[in-house]
Image 1 (cartoon, rainbow, N blue to C red):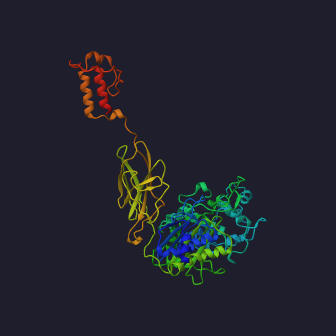
Image 2: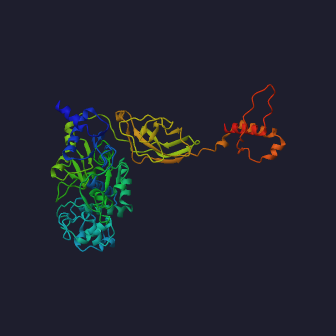
Image 3: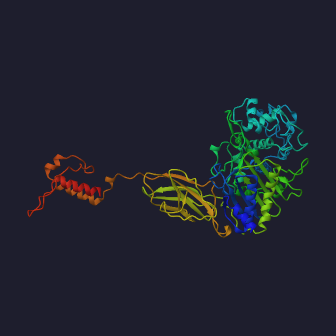
Length: 592
């Protein structure tokens, strides 16, 4: 009875995603954690042996607390960006495009240009290697302080960096690198461990130099897309610039804006420049696609790996002077469990890979500062496993990896259009149509939507209507309004025995199309051939005098003239209709 009351009380908070009754105790564990630490929302994903068996949203995604958190929401993952960067470096090393023991700066280094080297005074910097940056042994200690500041990590004081380096606000990532290079090292490279954001920011610059491409572009093309990950993007600083489906971040703290306006701003929205934190703390993920990424490099046989076994072994091997941090991952003693956490004001995150075949990601849109909070967050996934007690479903809730493409529309008149597309790798897809604005309300996993090709008769998503749902690649949509602008969006989804017949939707990268129906033709231009024949016959029969009196085109008849009331009927035959009466009759026929 007590357990039932607890579950009922906790369920009062929003929960989304595919609900599994046997996993209600797992839901309760997450809800209790959020209540204990006063966190507004969370997205949790758990896989077992390569299958996504749990994806749930809890609490609220927006600051107004009106939008439920959903499994497809994107959240800042902060320092979990470091494993992403480490994967990119390891892939380049595996492909022979760089070596881990190669120096970073100087004539033989990857970053040999004067933009960086001209500010170097500490000669030890020229000894830093790629491996040392991966393992946080490059020589920077963010707790040591610099220029009478309490920290030496420039993300903590961007306005000071801009002034010191005579740069504009908000300060760019390259300027942050120049600043730390100009201030020198806190210890000899390789001699000790000290966690360093700047080391990973420099790794991002190495990726750009070696590949000749922007950091995010190369990572998307060579790491995320091959892993089937679509729900991942670099984040933006300001709330107004957030990504579609990105959650909002809760914080009670403020700081002077990094844009140099002098205004106090909420910490998550302008205290630091997120765009300058890309390779060490700038990524957004959904929890489910963060799990998908880890499964693509976990060394197990459940899914193909992006890296060879030898490369994965190197990535997860820790060296002296720190045996717990390998290359982008914290590892246990026998290297069977890897994990990483992330923290920024307004967000906290944790991703874990275990030897028992479990991988999970927990993303929050708030955080607490006590050490106990971080202990509880790292234990939360383990608590879920204990609560589930092995009652994991047999299905796999991963959404399709490939979207539909080439969405196009062929207008069939002012009220109909033929829409077609090339299918992705799901089993079916939704076509949603909305007038005036792009669609913002999106389908939810576990929910089926009834479609109808007559606009407005199918299920609704916000103000949009579902006009197709199924395996087809085309539909003729009817009952459109003439002269209106419509937005179409195709959402790929998977629903079969493997998903437990639950529909799971891919919401990132959907093809979207804008089209406009033609305006209605003038009413008089739509008369039939029969009415045109009638009018022509009437013109041929009219008196010659009447023909001379009018010069108006037949398509623009003269307005009817007022007439006196008709006289009462008599026995005499009625007089023949006048020309004007016949013309009025013909005009009415045209209008009909």
